[in-house]
Image (cartoon, rainbow, N blue to C red; front, side):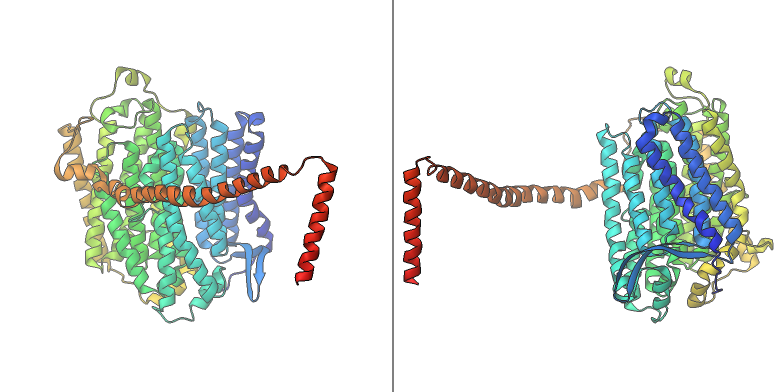
Length: 639
């Protein structure tokens, strides 16, 4: 790997990238009432400042230089030193631009979306804190700093998902997300313990250099990477730890865009790409990552077909796309997985914000069966939503086409994986255009009151939609297919991060130009076929499922999400509740309470008994004193 240069003059700007959102959090927390309506604008501008500093770092560092420095020593014992430090390299630069850029647009969008909410300022303080922890996650130069950011975004997701805390259902969704993420985080934490004990530290440089001394497939590396992957499964909603993400739609729509598009749910992918040398040395783990990704992508796509809540469809779409990214990582195509992270960030943020604009126009309605015909009422939202839908469906020349094509090309040597991912992509195009047609085509199916309420969103909401739509169109050109004989900028930029893994994995399976053209045409044909089928069903035939009607057979199983939530509730939640009731009665009441109450009774009894001798009679006191002295003398004589 090329030795990176340390440009010291860039350390101060890099420090301010995470500090600006943290400053916004403190300002809004302590002075929110005084700042009033200016507070959200300050919060948004501070995130914009972080984005501009990220651009400055990107321009000055490129992929030939990096920053890796310690701010202070946190803990030190023996030969092990745990430092608080930052690493700015090509991988973290990509994430910084995505997090702060899309984060700013979501902040701006939220000014219009949340301005009537009584918790307006509090909402922005949470958003700023979330951005801070996410930046900490991707900027840390060790697994310890990454883990701090990892847990921080988990806390903020809990606060944001349960933002409307007066609703018990929303609180339950927030708790579910928090608890399920803790299950995955335990794996991450155990992996860190193994690294600290066997690899001599937690900073990336130490861990990766020491890991390189092990043979490929060493059991220790397999254990460490499997534990890290468990953490990634929780944060990035992979089977079986995915059910929290659809329920997280309880939060305000900007939260859904922030958490489920470019930031928190991609943390697992970032962590694996950051640890690519470890995973490349553990081929068994890569196989597990690949198959979990494939299964998640296909399973979530099938569930998305029968969902009728506009945000739930997008939620299962996110789970499916994350599965596609993990499949790419499992195939060893690390840059392809990250490329899809970036393109997905743009079109999925656009989809969620577009859905928020639809919900805003509908006065809070989220059921697509009660929408329809919105194209002529909210054209800006409809056009930008169409762009995002084409992008996620993999239609040329939109961003999703290029990143999906790259993953499918990487999977082509593994025919079963390629077939399953192609089917998943075809289903994605179908249910996304099902969403689009049910929402924007045919006639309006809502109430007259909702129809009267229909209006386009304010500029603070439509401007982010327009900007994101440009990236949903153009971001794919960062990674042009080899058959087009143009440079693949994204692969070249990330090359210093993954070049060691390339030598470990060996020569990648490249397809020839004719095969690549065939794969692109086939993927496009499958996507177009899905779109046509969706058009026939939901526009030509106007097949709209009636609200509150019961489906049967397989359709019911898909609509009910294969009863996975009910299964988890029966197998895990209810037994835990019963066990907690038993512990409450046996341990809490019969042991702890009995011991505490008995101790209190003994103290009270002793006090009441001793109080009887406090008569105030001096003669009695003298008698007791002489009697006690005689007893002491008698004891002395006996000894």
